[in-house]
Length: 135
Image 1 (cartoon, rainbow, N blue to C red):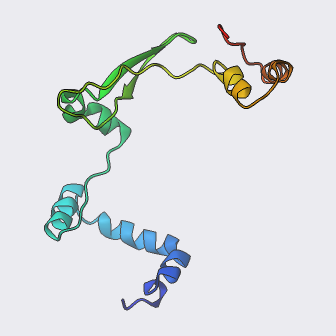
Image 2: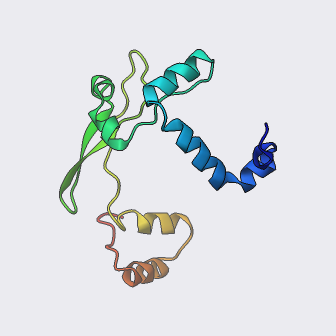
């Protein structure tokens, strides 16, 4: 490598911002498809990095049932989540459950870590979290 700033790993690390600007400028000279095709022909494993919008709009994601509708109770809201990506013939992935609401699992986690009920109650009150519906 001719440029002394990048001829050793430690120098590349030290000059990362400059190196990133140079690489980004070169990458902008061609389309993503061109780069992927060229790198693939050269034996470099690569692929396009999608934005979330591209992922959610992908036909591949739809066909493989990788996009699921999720609903939470508090506040009542529907949203989309990505299902587990690996798929095996004859095996269905489990039905995902919504994430816990803020504070929903806090008492249980603190209890598992050995906190007393009084300590848990103070913590929930201090951070204005709701107590679990069922203990």
